[in-house]
Length: 369
Image 1 (cartoon, rainbow, N blue to C red):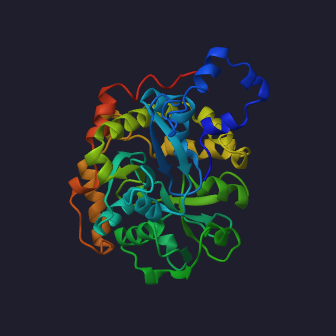
Image 2 (image 1 turned 120 degrees about the vertical axis):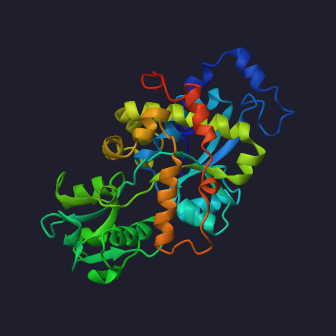
């Protein structure tokens, strides 16, 4: 778990800075003995937690920007924790069972979770098309067409979003898993590619690809075959919450979505500043600003926007795309508990209301950082 940017800034305050507070503020701070929960000191803000799918990367920036620039606070929200994770399936279960209030993860994995009665609902589609791809080290194996995969040794992890993608991509292009040699690998399985133990792996262009390029010889050292350009239809990752939150505290869900979409607009226009905010959020991330910016640029170039977002704003969702996502998963027989209906997996009203309120505009040049 990493602290949010606000909490990290607070931890770095100097004694001199604290001493510079006004006498009145110090007196007020000392008069809150009745409120043991601290709500008074926070101005009555609603406290929430966020569960990420994995370690911090560029497209997690909306949470950190909204915290750093005060968008959450403007909506009456205090994000107490932004917790890193071990994959989308776990993040979905954590939010679905109420151990975190909001989450970020792979939306096709949300469909599979719903089929297994995990009560989670998508609020915004961050990746309008999937950022998943098949990757090779160019000097070792060229990957210029889908047929080039035939005969390659693929590193697969038979759980989570990458395996679903891998199966669906092959099926969409008339390939069989027997057309490749498969090796079971464990995360971080991309290392197997760099070490030459496998020829190809599924990879996220907005996560592993920049890191893999650095390890393989720099920009352009990989061949990257995007699933979205080869028949793999469906969303990538997005914002979600539990059914319980939607049903019992829709006002909080709306306010959180407002802040998130406003931050999304900032992130799209300011990948460099977003990368700095992410790097400043924790000492462990302090040297990763360049990586975060490259990850974000991949999303800006390929996944953040679509015809739907041009009409309805960032994060907007479309029933036809959701249906394509569900159909793809159903065709791969991964919905073991039954196939959910489109209306079961998403609530578009929150992001639509955020767009109508102007939450996604005017955030690009905020000087709050």
